[in-house]
Length: 239
Image 1: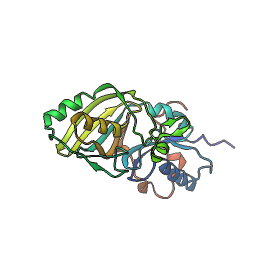
Image 2 (image 1 turned 90 degrees about the vertical axis):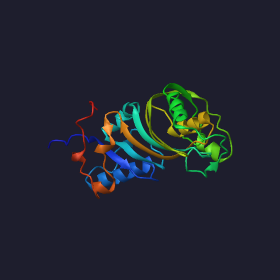
Image 3 (image 1 turned 120 degrees about the vertical axis):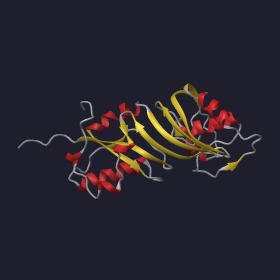
Image 4 (image 1 turned 60 degrees about the vertical axis):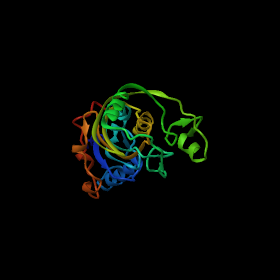
């Protein structure tokens, strides 16, 4: 009897608000099992999205999980909304925003000049409430205990920042960037450069490499079960 080919494929998911990336993986694993996949089927993702972010999550199944690092290394595109009137300990709405005193509201010219200054190879300090490892502990665990994780600046690559809409205090931008860029940190740093607040109030990932949000499906649209043989494999290198 011929052995079935090993399971390997990609699912593009439009992650909903407030669900973690690993929770999406768990839901996909359950749907694959319902479709006949082995109980221990491997399911991973090619780059985390925070619970308060939505958009493209590249789910890797079976042997395709070997491609995790390759997918994570691809450039990414985000749509971000920044609140320039407030700051926050987490640099987003996971914690309570705090209003700041602003001596002068920046005009559009200020915004465009400031955004241009963040394009290229820039030094960026990750958010204190991030999953970075510090002496064997997650930075967010230290921060939640009131300790400064002491995260250091590191170079990240930002290829483009396009101004989509500005109506103080709301700034909407599109960011194209390389691996390891924190949009929360970028929002914070843009605000500091403008002498305003800088809290990320909404984030949506629209592209990872050649994968685009237009090709993604919602979890509900996948139904109760996923047939493993239906997984996309045509865009995968040999695994």
